[in-house]
Image (tube, rainbow, N blue to C red; front, side):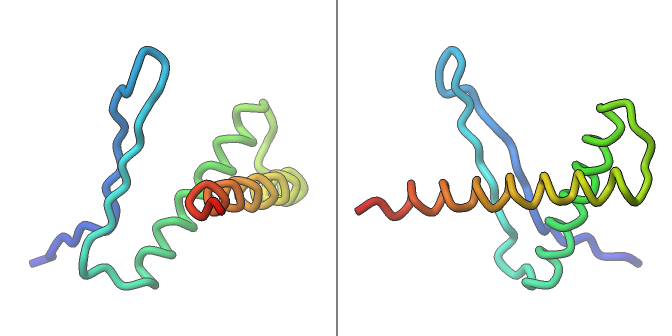
Length: 88
């Protein structure tokens, strides 16, 4: 019998008229490798969706361009999150 283990649970709630408050919970006994796999898979699916939403086909050229754009966007957002968490 397969055993189900929760890795990631994410949801948002309304914090105001236009504001959303995001909640992300990682299971207490989750291995880093499992969490990394889930996050990378989510990013992969986002890239595929991004390409399709632009009306393009999934080619190596389109994928690599979208991957570069997502990589830069993630780099920027993680930097902003770090700055907000560690204000001086």
